[in-house]
Length: 219
Ligand code: C5P
Image (cartoon, rainbow, N blue to C red; front, side):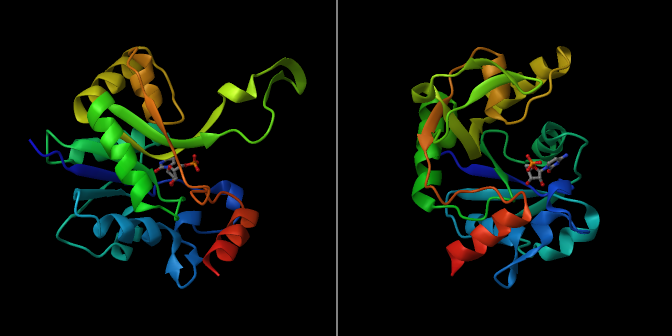
């Protein structure tokens, strides 16, 4: 059976750290709103069967591709937005690809690598080796310095089989657990997650400084 990808594109955040009136994912980045950079990328991928855009209804008009698009409402937490998107997905056998719309610079090779690993292991995410030393702190006092050789920064897309994602959500709900990324749900149920080396350009736009970096990458 040939698996296809169902994409949940997260555009439901408020983006307070950007300090702008409209959420960061709807700011312009080189004549195109931020979220459309990844939306257009997924629209052009043959492996993508459907795209669920999670956003407030007033922003739906930005996403024009009726063939594959459906919409879901944002939830309070990131994981609630993902859950709302999952409920809309039609294909019960697809593999789910969750992506932060605040990451505009996707590379097809990276996404296909993660898709292939997800087909083998059930769950995969893009990431890269930590560049800085990372310390576990309490109130700005160091408790422990973590071994950098074992630290990876985790990005999106995160690609997970539907069955695993549903099991992870059920566990998190039952145990009232909040997670900050999607493969964490799979980790909760003791399942392995494969990390796939990502291009350095796959940055998340969070602050005005990140927007300047993104503009520099594009020019
Ligand atoms: O806040 P953060 O940058 O980690 O959010 C990651 C992505 O999740 C963003 O694309 C944001 O729009 C989305 N999000 C969402 N619903 C929420 C919170 C965040 O769709 N409740």
